[in-house]
Every structure is written in C-alpha cells, then in structure tokens.
Image (cartoon, rainbow, N blue to C red):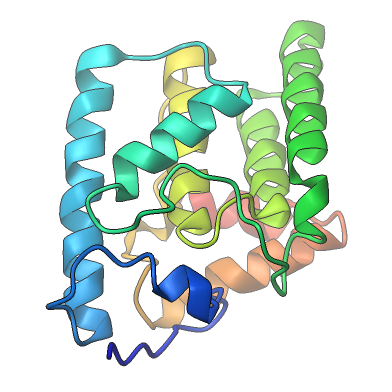
Length: 195
C-alpha cells in the first residue's frame, strides 16, 4: 500500500482513484512524484514537437492530462467523478470548462487585457474547476504556459522559479496567491508568476 503525504493545498485521492495506480511497486510519495515527473517530461517533449494552438476545448485538456499522467494513472485524461475540497460538484465540470473556454476566447478577441491578465484569470479558473482527480495544479500551469506561448505569443510564466509540487515556501505563496484570486485580488498571483 502506498503511503501518501499530501503537500499543503494538494487534493487527496479517494480510494477508488488510488486503485487507478498502474505501478504496483510504488510505496511512497517520493516514488510517485518521480514517476509522474518522468511522464510529464514526456508530455512536454510531445508538446514541443506539436506546438498546439487549439487548446480551448475539453478534448485538448483531457489529451494533455492523459499525456502527463497516463503512464502512472488509469484515469489520466478523464474528468473527475467525485467531489473534492475544490471545484464544486463533479457534475458541473464539463459546463464550467465550456464557460472558461468561451470566456477566455472572448478576452482574447476583445484585446482589452494584457496577455498576462488573460493567462492569470484562465489559470485561476482552471485550478478552481479542478477537472481531474489529481494533477490539476501541474496541468493548469502547463495549460497556462501553452496559452501564453502558443496562442498569445508571450513568454511562459516562471511560477515562482521553484518546484511547486513539493512542500516549501514557494508552494505556500502560490496557494496563498490563488486564495487571494478567489477574492478577485489577482495581484499576488501576478507577482508570483513573473518572479
């Protein structure tokens, strides 16, 4: 049985989701993190070759999540089917994603906001929807970087210039900045992503 200690702000997996682990030899959070990171590196290599621009749709976000986690989890690329501490009812996820994609396209078309403002709002909303059982923060950060680079023609965010998947000060600042964005104060998140 795997012993998972979740970092601050991480979404715990329910027992059914834990049964989706494809690698029976994993026994610790550190081993799981390493396998997931190796899978994410493969996804990034795929993205570098593909350079996708048609991102704002459910099909793409599911394909991206699958490419990031399919070597580790059976449910990779599938929308969550359980409620979490974030994201509201799982039944609402598809509708909330469609609304996010439509809103983001409108922000882009109107050209009233900076690219960073659009990306910050997109990122915050995607994290708050929490579409997948796990990996939502990593997925949302990569989606945001793809939006910035491939659609908006801007530089990727630095995300505090530290690994946010581990416990530490940067992760705490990131979570706090997301909580501030919940109250429509995007400035801490904006400052964090461009450190």
